[in-house]
Each structure stands twice: as C-alpha cells, then as structure tokens.
Figure 1 (cartoon, rainbow, N blue to C red):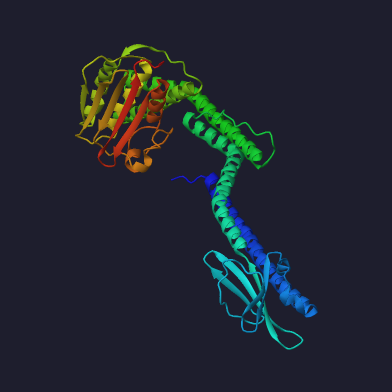
Figure 2: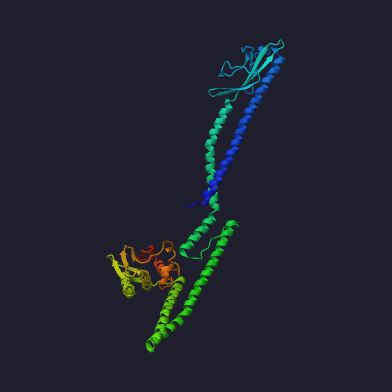
Amino acid sequence: MTQSIKWKITFWYTGILTIVLAVVLGSAFLSSEYYSIDNMKAELLDEVYDLERAFAETPAYLDHQDLPSYYDDGIMLSLYAQDGTFLNGILPDDFPPNVAFSDEVLQEISQMEDHWFLYDLQITDSSDTAYWIRGINSYSSIARMIQRLTRLLLILGPLLILFTAFIGYRMIRRALLPVSAITSTAREIERSSDLTKRITPGKIRDEFYDLTETFNEMLTRLEQVLQQEKQFSSDAAHELRTPVSVILGHCEYCLDELELTDEVREEISRIYQKASQMSRLVSQLLTISRAEQGYQLESEEIDLSVIAETVLEEMEEAAAARNIRLIYTKASGKYLMEGDMILLTRMLMNLVSNAIAYGKPGGTARIHLQNEGDFLSVSVEDDGIGIPREALDKIWNRFYRVDQSRSQTEGFGLGLFMVQWIVKIHNGTIQAESSYGKGSRFLVTLPVNRTK
C-alpha cells in the first residue's frame, strides 16, 4: 500500500504538536494550580498572624462583635478557648465540627465537594490564658475551576489538534502540488510515450521550481536522445534498402540463371537467406519509422475473418515445416470493422508467426474470433515454450527477445512491438498471458468503429 508523504508529514506534525501542547498546557495548568494553592496558603497564614497581632493589641477582641473583622479575602477566622470552646468569629456552614487543633500546622479538610485549608495558632493573653486562633480558607472554588478547565481542555484540546492537523494537511498538500504535477506528467508520459510533454513550473522560485526545471531538462534530453535513435534507425533503414535489394537481385540472378556447383549454390543460398532477413528488418524499421513520424491510417471497411483465413493459408507451409497444426475457430456473427487492412494483416501475421516459431513441434496453434457487439476479439494461443512472468511486461519493447530458448529462433524482437502499435492505432487493446513451459495466449480486442 502506498504511504502518502502528505499523511506522514501531517502525522508527525500533529504528533509533535500534541506533545508540545500537552507539555506546555500541562505545565501551565499545574503551575497555575500550584501557584493559586500556595498563594491561598500564604494568605491564610498572613490573616491568622494578623489576628494574633490584633489580639495582642486589643484584648477585648474576644468580645468584639464586629464579625466582618473575622472575614477577609475569603478567609474565615475564629477564636476558641483552650478547651476548644467557640468564642467568636465566623465558620463555614458545612465545616465539620470537632476538628482537632494542631498548633502551627497547615491542614487540608475535605467533606463531600467542599475543601478547606485549616491553620491553627495557639496564643496567650497577658494573664497567660491560652486561646486558639483558627483560620479557614475554602479552595472548593479553585477545585471546581480546575475541574471545569480540565473538562474544557479534554474537549477543546482534541478539537484544536484536529483543526490544526486539517489546516496543516491542507497547507502541506498545497505545498506538494508540484510533486503531484510531476507524478501526473510522468505517468502520462509513461502511458502515451510522449516526451514532448512538460511540467509548468510554479511562480515562486523554490526547491520545487528547481525540481520541475530539472525534470523538464531531463525530458528534453531524453527526447533528443530518442529522436536521434529514431533518426538513426530511419536513416540506416533507408541506406540499407538499396544495397540489400541489389544483393537479393544478384543472388536471384545467380541462382536462376547461372550454372553453379553445389557448394557455390549453397553459399549463395545462404547469402540470399541472410539478405532476406535483412530485407525484412529494413522493412520493419521503415514501418516503425513511419509510425513514429505520424502514420496516416488508411481506414476502410474490412472483414476480419477474411484476413484471418488469408493469414492462416499463407502460414500453413511454415506450420507444416514445424509439424504444428493450425486450428481456426470463430463464433457466429459478422466480423466487419473499420481498419487498415495491411496493418491488421501484419498484426495477425506476426502473432501467428510467433505461435508457430515458439510453439511445440507436433503441437497446435489456435486462432479464435469472437464477436462482442461493438468489439471484435482475436485470440492466438500456442502450447510452446511460454514466456517467463518477469518478461511479460518487456516483450512489447523494441528489439527485446526473451533469452535462451527464444534466441534460437530467427527474428529481431520487433514483431510484438509492431503488433502493439497496430492495436493502439486502431484504439484497441492487447493482453498477453503465459505459463512458462506450457504456452502463451495473446488476446486482441478491436472496436468495430474505432472513431467512437
């Protein structure tokens, strides 16, 4: 499965952002909580000691009826006798009774959802009578605030992360658009074999701009090299055409008109055979050259079954030489279509020729026609040596021949290349299936009307 770099970057970006947010917000949350609690504790102690000083200055504070004096900044103060009897002050409504006194010890008291800090201080008056000052500071509001903030962070945190990830993904996707353009163009070139296509660079000169320019320069260079190769093949074919024709003509003259010894006749026949091979190669190269320069299809209404029967008749002698039986079948129906008769004849000739050349001596080559309404299909199947699986995608390349056993046959590796080109120019498709050592099957599908 392809893993998109956009998703990878978004994943890492979101993961790092989540960690950073968790650390920063968690640290801020905890530090603010600790600061608030420490501040409340400090204020509680200050108020208790302030009351101690007030009591020392005003002993009558025991009977002081100004109750607000016992309440300051949310801190409630109260006075108790040595035995714990309440004397004066303010207590929270829900504060539990009978909480033991502990001199200069900060305590935490909780009951249900209420939470308090408690600080007791023992003092004595001028007559050495002992009293207790108790300060109480409720931090229930802070606890509730912390709970609300926690719930808020648990809700807003993931939403913030998702929103940031979405925005980040959009930005990354936009930034990587040139890469998508390069990929799309490369695939289009691979499908169409058109090296004239180029990628439009962006307006901003960045790394992707340089990558696009480099890719375009590479395409230009490849186009030049391919054009030089095509030109060389075309020039070589044209230059070889005349001398090969002369060689063939002289060989035919010698074989037909002159009295030759058996040894000389054998040598001239061998020269004639090799020159004939060269002539076929030149003819194929010229056809390929015309195809690459824009072949004008001579379309007419033809009967594909007639072409198949003609090809099989011509190939009977070659099949008999290898003791291969040709089996021709066709489904009922008409096989009329628009196409180039010469090219389609060559297509079938090449496929049947391959079935004979690479078939098993004493075996069979099957040709079957099928009418599928808007399409006609032709299958050519042999029971010969087959094609290795790793070579199936390469058999359509020019001059490619499967190694070892296939190299024993006469040929130049251009037959299937031409077959594929002929099928494509007729807007058809071709598929190859093979089991190595068991045989091969080629299926051609052609539209009845190629312009539709």
